[in-house]
Length: 108
Image (cartoon, rainbow, N blue to C red):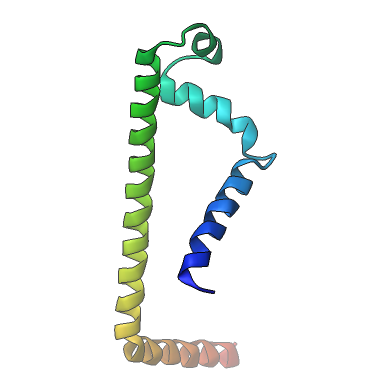
């Protein structure tokens, strides 16, 4: 699959997962959390200040979420590279452990 096609497919998959019956009922709670107001307050007050606050809080939410997952991805990459670089050592250690477990199993 080409790179140009995978981005729109990922976007559509995200929209579909957002509209799923498991996630859609959570949307009012997220809107209330982001705005700092209840749904009734949001319906009653439709000012530019409210929109500005919701957009600012939404941006902060997305940035915070993104930072956490980028750090998790970078950490997973680092751990994977570390394990790959020391694979021979880990193979020896794993072999020794298997031999020890086998000897323990035969002794009991």
